[in-house]
Image (cartoon, rainbow, N blue to C red; front, top):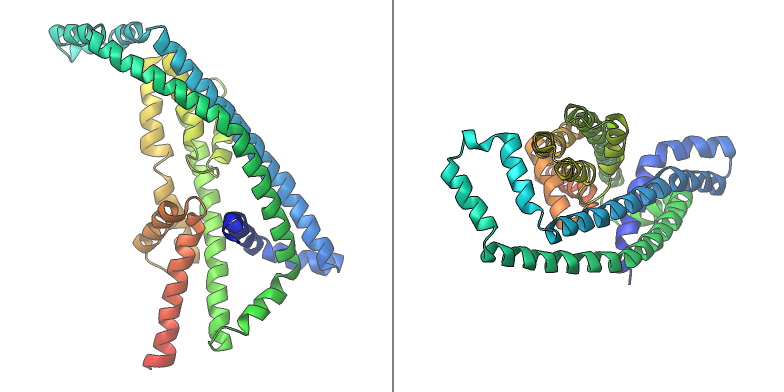
Length: 330
């Protein structure tokens, strides 16, 4: 029964760990745990849920515009002009024989290639219709999960300590060992959150540099949007730099588009796998390679929330092995 609510509940648990120190101080200040939990829940709504909802709507709108533009380009058969312009701009004749370029152009004008383009048009049209139809479902799902997330977060912030003590009674372990496991989970969540922030900052700065080199005017704004987009699953920063590449191609700035494409793939999107485990290792006493596989494996297995779940599972299992060594083997 809880399966449809599992993801927002997990996110509520993760946010409750991150907000735990603030919640403690706030409860001492306002004296009522209900008021403290309500203040933090409203804060999360205003600072995280609403901005990310708006960003998600922008991303969906950009995706539809991108598909429509690609569809328009293909339908107008302008791919031949684009290929010729690409040859001229990149001076491919210096690297490719004129006869080879002629063969490529002849193939582009052949019936076989036109058939491929026709199939592509039908596929793009179908995907565009499916994507547009699924938007309403996605919006409804987001609103429903956001409601579950916020209400769960409120009750965890208000009654989390009572619930933890209740669970503790049923765990067949020494009390200090239970605390050690809980503390491990807490430190892992904080380290993962710090890692996500570090990745967002790095991707925002690198992408802004790339946009500036590529000649995009509003590179500071796009860099800031990339920072926020880095937290949005499943594509992260790519939802900003990929449309930018397509835009540069569409205005026939091919060199800038190719540069930004390689910059985005090799640096902006790849740096996630380097910085996140490195920052997390500061707060988690585990080898870098183990954290790397925990993050990537968790992401593949559980989706975006797996960035937290993967390291939590690894660190908890590691802690249990240490407890077993301490209590049984010695």
